[in-house]
Length: 292
Image (cartoon, rainbow, N blue to C red; front, side, top):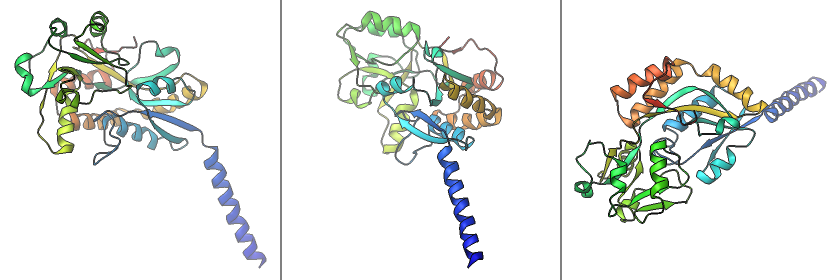
């Protein structure tokens, strides 16, 4: 009986010790958002996007912490980003955020965004594959642009939007989303909207439908955007970032590149710049960092 009691007591001690250790783990709150294929929060490809797969890769290498994922719209994102234990695995540096955030080395490049239209309206815009001028499009009062109020674009785009936001041919949404629903084009609420080329491709793939949208690059967005991991500029955030900086090996970042190419297709120009800027960490005049 004494031996059995001793064994039971020993097992209870191990159980309590393990429970106490789990409870002592500090929590990192990871911000994510709804934006396929950057973050895929539901369906067949859930968790396999560029940002959420990279978030999971970091979490797997930080077992000493408890991880909580928060899916935030634009309003909630900019509120939560200032809290003390919040990290983002994959995002660009927002102007002014260096006052309250610490950032890693570059981890990725965001593809150039542009505009999306209905293919049936292509004669109003131009041939597929051509690069358009947003300044010229905005001068046309018969074409309405959809703009997300909280989103930050290039300086050239932001200057144009400040000039035209009050005009009738610009629809400004403050819904807090990070991208427009493509059905805004179907319902003829707008004639064109800001988007990434992957949005319509992914939309057609998961729904098993024909891609009815046409993507164009625009002259005012001619750079790739530098992406980084971020944490709160607190003692806790700096400690976590110290761990992240050790985790971010070239091998891990090349695995991430494979995910990028899965959803955006293989592009030699993109890959060459990724290798030069992200892997070799060389400055590149075709990469912009909004936080600098």
